Length: 384
Image 1 (cartoon, rainbow, N blue to C red):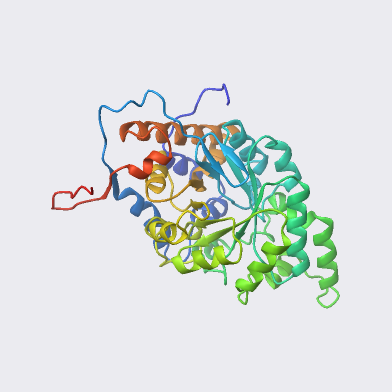
Image 2: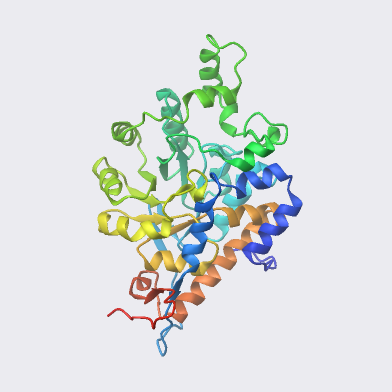
């Protein structure tokens, strides 16, 4: 844990500060979502609508936030969600966020399109849980190389994101003419993937029929993969020596199918609202998926978490751990590595205090917490 002074700030204040500090196209690349961004707003609004009922006279002199996840143990049920091109927000990029997570005993998930390589991230977070996120592309060798590299770098799991059959229209990016690879602002933060020897080889082969093709054009050719199906996921799981976590599950039937092809865990996620503007909020989908899985594998959660209390609500509704995205980026953009530490510190303290208020001595005890939606004009009905 860091001994530097903690920089206290609300997530909303950090977001405002990031908006002021960053180039407009970079801020909106992270903040924006699909279409009119209703899903982005709904994820947070739905979490805000829940209320936890405090319990009194319970011994909470010791509150234990530790949990086990695929790949190891965490000091608290938080992992940094996979977010691409973090070099846009700070020169250290994913190295800074991974190191901060490790210092707090938390997990880190490296995006397929991260600015820093798996080897660099593994060095920065050698002692903690590290997951490598990827998509199934149309190029089988690219898929194989991503898995191979993650294993060689010492990652603990593959996170396969499956909720991107097509690319959404992100109006902010269109207005800013922002392209994640071919953009002057993004040039120094381009995905580390494009500098890998195997990627250059694959690009060279494709250029045999597409002279002067750019890395962006090659990626656009192989990803997304709208024809991707359960057989492709099963093949990937069979190929990977690492456990495969399936991210982007919202329907209970899809959760069951994921288990059927060998998923080690599922992540209930709507991609933070960045890919569909009328998706169900992740927190509304969570109980159905958790019930369908019925403890067979862990269920993780992301999309909309802005506080430790939000995390407590997700844990109470069936999640085993929580991934946090945009707040980490805002901390990184505004205060660098110390900003990430501050965000993670604040989330952990907030969760610990919330657990004490509801009488939960362990994260598992949160399943027994009384959680209500806003009752409106009627008196609340207390279950049990």
